[in-house]
Amino acid sequence: MSRTSPVVRPVHSPAHEPIREPAHEPVQASASGPVHPPSRQAAARPARQPALREHNLALVLGHVADSGPVSRARIAAATGLTKASVSSLVETLLEARLLAELGPDAVPARLAGAGRPGSALGLDPRGPVGIGVELNVDYVSLCGVDLAGAVRTRETVVGDLRGLPVPAALDRAAGVLRRAVAELGRAGASARTGGGRVVGVTVAVPGLVETGSGEVRVAPNLGWRDVPVLDELRVRAGLPPGLDLLLDNEANLAALAEFWRGGHTDGGAHALDTFVYVSGEVGVGAGVVLHGELLRGRHGFAGEIGHLPVPGADARCGCGSRGCLELVAGQDAILRAAGVAAPAPGWAVDGAGGADAVAAAAAAGDARALAAIGAAGAALGTTLAGVLNLLDIDTVVLGGGYARLAPWLGPRVTAELRGRVLAVGAREVRVLAGRLGPGAATLGAALSVVRRVIAHPSGVLG
Image 1 (cartoon, rainbow, N blue to C red):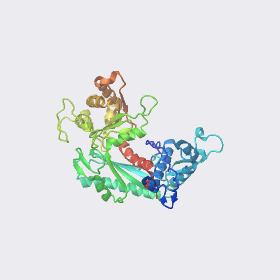
Image 2: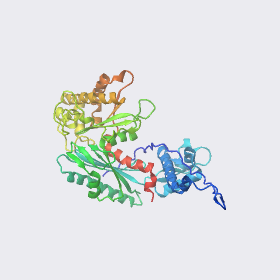
Image 3: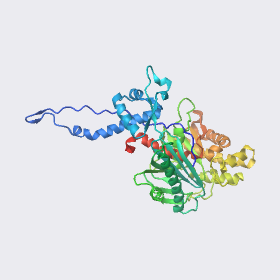
Image 4: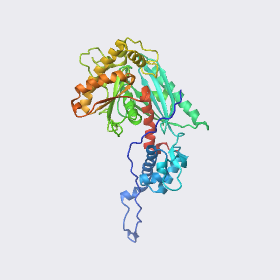
């Protein structure tokens, strides 16, 4: 496993407002009984207190996550909570290692104000850790991040999972997960390095994941159907029963990572919050982000762009249909058309995969490589034009192996979009390269865990 330098801190998107408990009215009594008998609402007030405190804990933690190093006074001013309430809430978050004292020097000068600066608070790097695991067709990858989004551990095990029995594939993922949990546990026990307990795992897979389920309904390129991934991984990796586990599609999680961490803009001064992320691996998947929210569809199956039909294509796909986009624009099709043998590390492994080999050939002017990328771009652009017309979206982010090929793939996709998107005369259509590399899905999976902690900190309080 490798350590990497911290990345930018997570953005806490839910908007919170402080909730204050109404003042309790004294109950007036007389010989004939109470003049103002307690209402059902008043009787329930004690039970509401924990919910109010949970809300305000999230409000404070979320403000620190959004704003970076900030003093207690600034938190009170920004949230509308009293200074006394902020002090109490901060103490709870410090004890739980969700916040850390950074000292007065950490307060940015623009926020310091007049007088003696207060001690700054920041997210505690020794606090909870979230893990993301991706099972893809030709690799298993893992990423662990702390509350601030710093990557604490990474590992990728390359190897084709196609044709491998489901238990063997899950054992491979479980082994990666066990090693990460053990490493993070050792770090947490070390006074020198600090550490943090693992509070959740999100698993990314290239297939249909029904919302709220822990099962892969269909993953054609893996040959999986109705596989209880989370139950199996919990047992095989020896994870405790109470550990939070979630399952999602890999393109969805990569799209969220690009939204949270990609640093893309809308072409102006605002962050990009509406786009189609399309990932080119063995399969081709998409994640659609609309106004900062993932479009999932009724069952959670949205984004299966790789199985949309391409005009003129008729080959049989592993899904059972014919002429699917991934047969024309997926990694196998591009490698075959380019005449490039896939290197051992696979398609999109950093610095050594098949996408790099095709990119190197294209950069050298190789005619077959350029033609292969052009054909894939034409098919991809044609298909994406339908998506953009349907959803009124004007930006595409190329991820996975496509990001490596973006200097050649992007212009061809853009040309197809400009010729086919109806509203192109009224707005610009943009094609951007993803910025997070082949680890986008695992990063998005890991970040989804710590973002849940920031949104609901009471769930990890001791």
